Length: 218
Image 1 (cartoon, rainbow, N blue to C red):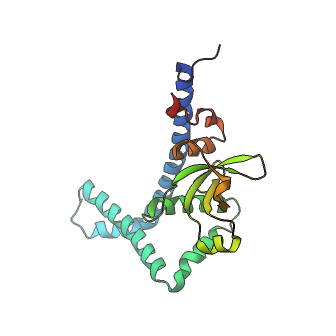
Image 2: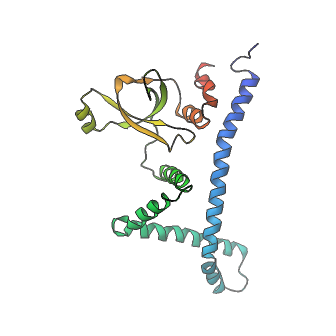
């Protein structure tokens, strides 16, 4: 006999899936950050040691940590300044182009770069709403995120009435992987699902799909 949708087993399964979906990407991200920071600190070690050398003998641990932190911040700032003021941002483009040609690393680099841009760019609009679109063929439907107004030049060129711009995400990285599509508004359907639920469902490759919209109906 199946349990109620809000029964102990359903709640436990939901908590487990949510915990896995949140913890694994977080742990992987933290591990990558630790490796990167450790590598950069190794490169900056001579600079830090030189600064500490000119300080009074046996500086307090707090001072050493502060010097290290300031050196790390200065490192990122200098890179940002160089990339910003290089004509045509040549360095930025060359770094991105080089990393994206390395087999095995290009995919990870591109995903992390897009995610970092989304997190750090205050002007980036988050997904507005969840929609249902017919894709990739008739009678097949996928969740999509409403992103922005369709450019007027696209609407005028297609001449198919009001259009909607959506991002059709792909798993397991729904926020950084997918198709940006301009579709007639009549082919885009409302669905009672939150953005968080949709991302969780796609990130878990459909495992969490059975719980979509449960919070609203329980």
